[in-house]
Amino acid sequence: MTLEQHLLKLGDESKPFRRAGLLPLSGLLSEELDDLKAAWLSLTPARRCEILSALAALSEDNIELDFTSIFRISLADEDEQVRERATRALWECEDRAVIRPLIALMQGDRSVKVRVAAAMSLGNFVDMAQDGKLLSRDGDRIREAFMAVIDNIHEEPEVRRRAIETVASFHTPEIERII
View (cartoon, rainbow, N blue to C red):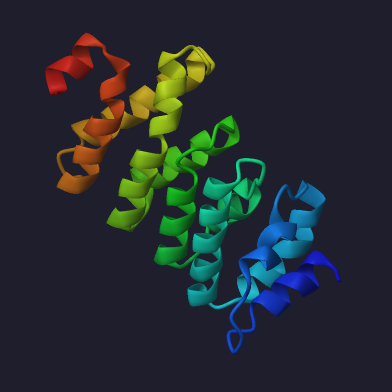
């Protein structure tokens, strides 16, 4: 069974899926993702959310599983709940390729919940930057993005609050002044 066929089978909402049936979605290569995207988008938003929640739980239970690629394609989903779940699922991600999409979501998504989730998920990258495990330009980009959100007086208070909480790890005079 191809990955596309497997995903279509998972999309059958008349049947519950088994978490073990999600294991083939771990560690997908870019060429596999291209084949998978259309099948993924053919699922209902509710089923995509259900699968994303199960994938997040599986990845927390077993660090060898990597569903980052599914989470990444879901960041651009038209459904707010799908985007939020995918964003939250990336909270432990160390792949710097998700920094830009998370910043874009934090600064510009139409959903407050998604912007909050993005601010929280960027927290791991803030910690990595402070520990010297991230390129300085990435750390600067993240800090500047947080400062733009914090300085935006029109931003929702919950988004600004989460941004302040997350960026507090930077320990700069400017951050300490804000806190």
